[in-house]
Length: 337
Ligand code: ATP
Ligand code: MG
Image (cartoon, rainbow, N blue to C red; front, side, top):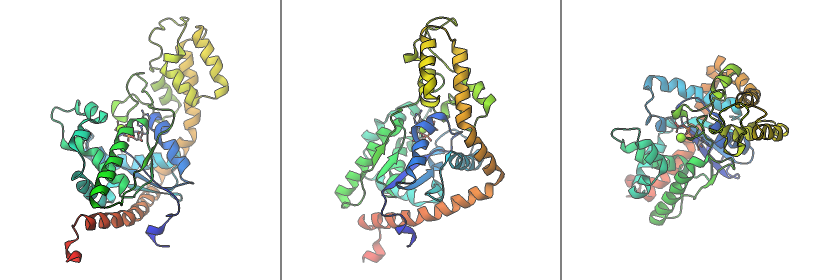
């Protein structure tokens, strides 16, 4: 079996995460938990998308360490290099070239309508064209593996639609070649940050890291916003509007949930105590991740080897797709004449 035949009988999956900071609960519930589960059923390609991260304001001197840290976090939550291909996006240069080819069919109007573009462009005085274009690179990240499915969080639904649209437009012009991948979005939806308002997001700092220890978890969770109408400890609360309660339902032992809900509603347990229980649940759930991350931090060469092997495997597939796309677009002129 050669590299590109590897696992062809299974459906293919591609997903990515930016090395823009620590992996947080939203990433875990929205995407990574699925990444881990899908490894047995699908042929999975998981990418640390550093060429997306350079759009942020991070110091370039920090990016290599962030990239390695991200790999450690992914391996710690259960991404398993024996069952998937884990690689760094910039190690596979073909993505960027395919993105340019897709730029020739991607409609500017659609890009301008993307919610993330509208949100993130407000953070700049002068918006870089890369921010507008980044869903095109994302389409290339996915379609270069001709992926059938993409496990992502709710915030990426719109970008996936665009990827499907780019595939459709390109196929219409150059012949059926790229599949239209399905977004696989978990029911949990968009996880709100600890501010109880914005999406939990690495770049907003309203997160709790999945590698936080007990003290760090409490340090973050104690400031979480609950029901804003609940001022005094014994005021009756409204669990249905409280983000901490929503998170409890996702992370706390289900047998404890009815009591937590009732004690909130009748004001018999204050928000601080409720958050303490939540912090304990998180610390317990995160403990095995922390343990694995500690081992990997002590053995960075193992992580490098994993990424090296992943890049090689990814490159073989990416090259084949790019060659085909180039040829259909009339760019392989030497062999065509
Ligand atoms: P950044 O703020 O730098 O964009 P991020 O926290 O949004 O970082 P990404 O690397 O952009 O993280 O996304 C990684 C994965 O996590 C994606 O599949 C994305 O859909 C998912 N994700 C990110 N934030 C959330 C959230 N709050 N709820 C659910 N899923 C999320
Ligand atoms: Mg994001």
